[in-house]
Length: 196
Length: 384
Image (cartoon, rainbow over the protein chains, first blue to last red):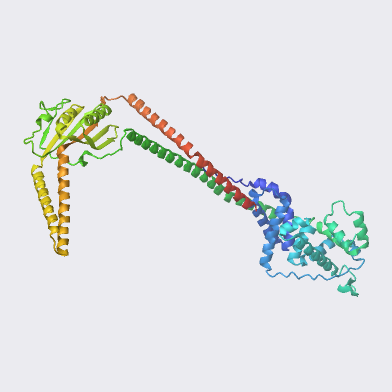
């Protein structure tokens, strides 16, 4: 007796219905990771295609969003690795620093679009392997577990990278001359800045 | 609450906002307050931006294309696989049924041969040694007589001292094969003869043929053959008589000569002087003894063949011939006849198929189990 291996076929409509709610997240994730619209569109489209090909075997063990994030992250990481093969994990110094008491107030006092612009620049300035966890966790709200699964790294490594990345991000914000009138240097030294 | 606690709780921040403890902390800690503000803004970073229409349309278009390229292959592969599986099952079933039919037919034929009670042997009559036919006649049906005279009376014995080796070959047909074979064996025992060789075979029409080589004492040989000739219907008789008197006498003379020679040699041994002479005499004695043994065997062979004549008997079973009157059958009769034959063939084929399926079922179950296990393992690997 012979048996025929029957696989469920992928219906494009069913796939579209399943992934349409996450179309926006996928695109903006790719945009933040790739830092330019063209590459972001390419990666986002590849993500959808790959998800469509694998949809028949998707058994629903994870959320659709998490599954899509994983595909998109891996695609972007592969492309970034191709473009920037040399990776330095010591790019961010883990030195201590302090901020002035009124920094937060000054930041909050800025207009929303100004804050967004500052943040975008700060995030873009991060090295790839620090930017990715920050985008996943802080921008897209993934838990540490989901983010570590998407990046295929241990959760401890993820925590460490996020911690450094956030510090770096804040440092970048502090370096904006328009925002702050003075800033603290590392190791507790204080110096007065010139007037803006 | 310290900064680490605050930041770990920030990870679990819900829409409701900060807890009183968290609020109290950021009122005191500038860094955490800034972090909170930054995180809040990060979540809203892309909220006002629109997804490009090119991307929205692009990925939909691409999956439609992908689906079109995948579908025909899927359909073709699935349909092709189905047809191949069906064809394979059909081939296995038909060939298995044919093999089963053939096996059962052969088994039936073999059991018929064994039921005959003898080893099946299809040796043809020509394998028997051909005998000289100085005398041959056409016996009357069932009478044991040839031209009104019995076979025994026709056997000429010119000289009582003559050494004659008699051989007769008889072929007869019978409708009562088993009864007549028993009769023949009973006659043989009664005349104190013995069966030198016996074979029974069956032909393709299930008709049996018995081939016997019998040795009967010469003094009752004629009577025996006459009794045989009345069994069934004799289709052929041949007899030969080989006069071996001269050879016999010659062999006897040679034997006597060798005996005399042996006596002389034995006498010479006692008079031998040297070892060399002794050895020579002993060698001659050995040769003479060998010749004596050989001549004795020859004489014994002659005696055996002279004292026991040989009858080669072939008994052929005859079944009633069926007379087929060939009439021109009508079309309807031909159709009915052909349909009947086809129906019988189909029934036979279906029965053989059922036998095959029942026989193959255990193996099929085992194979099915193996296939299921392999599929399960493959699925697990794919899952991982």
